[in-house]
Image (cartoon, rainbow, N blue to C red; front, side, top):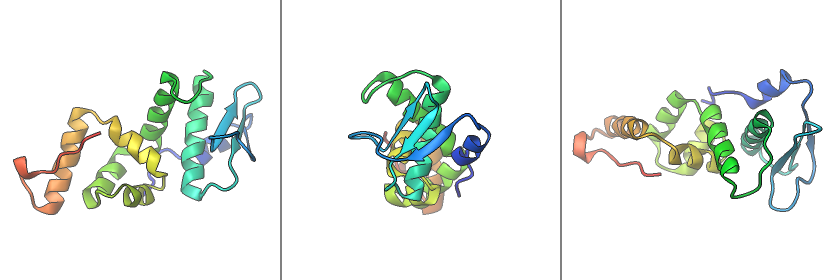
Length: 150
């Protein structure tokens, strides 16, 4: 899958932004310096984790607002990055075939936290669409359809 926005492609169109691999600081897997426009990624990240973290840091850079863990801005950046990197049709397919977060993340080529954030912020209409997709795959109808909760 991975038909959503490609953060590496976006980065290639932004020559003023650099990515380096190093220690992003305690408790972080990535960080962006808004002034120098340098994104630091933890070198031990797996490919899907690098992709998800880069997407997150690029959204920080676009918004230009510093924040820390737990800040409302941090949650909004996580939401925007998840929506951007996980295309809706891909999410529908991943959820239709598995209710396991790890499998969904692998299929979507993102880390589990990005899937968790994307699912947490579904609209009611999106929840209903995903429930119907799961039900159609499982041969269930109406009230028997699985309920997705965020």
